[in-house]
Amino acid sequence: MRTDGLRLAVGTFTRIPIPAPVSVDRRAARGAMLLSTPIALLLGLVIGIAAQVLVNLTATPGLLAALLAIGLLAWITRALHLDGLADTADALGSGRETTGALEIARRSDIGPFGVITLIVVLLAQVIAFAALLDTGAGGGSLLIALVVGRVAMMLATTPRVPAARPDGLGALVAGTVPAWAAMLIGLGWLTLFTGSVIRAHGAAAGLGTAASILGGVAVGWWLTRLAVRRLGGITGDVLGAVCEATTATVLVLLVVT
Image: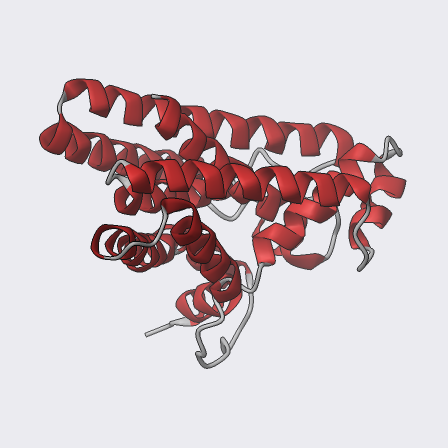
């Protein structure tokens, strides 16, 4: 049985040690993208519940627990998506044409747009998650936000979204996930999360959850289309930016709704 997709997913999206894939091809890339949401589910389940238990059973403030949780999440994912967010912000904020913007994204340093974007997005995640922890809804909320972030990333790898470069992670995964599969998976998670919240907290909470999920996906798709227009397509950095921006949006909307 081929496990290249699983190995690529775990090795790329987490720092959990796992044997390297035998072959890193587009088939493995498709498998990795499809497995990104279950991996996010597990991370959200463990980290979200641990943070909520820490708040509920100790005197730990929600803000401190949220900071520790988001920090742990960055560590276990090797800050891969955050790095992509910073690089994408620098590229898009530079005002350069496509070639120049892509060159900025390739650099190992971080510019002012990247710094500001990282600060704003991380603060939004921490503050929103802290507010949700204080209401007792933190565990489930983080789980939802992480999964939806990966759904948005998966939607960015459907066939109508090109790669910005002929090489790199973006080129490897671009167009690998069938649009029907991405839509089906996304609708499945939407139904599961909304239904679970309705059963636990009522129709109004379920409606707010659905709106938060759809709002997050909309932001992720807008950022994807912006990258296509400005950069010519997606890169690995763009996928990371889509994931982090979507995650932050879902958390903020869950607080608002």
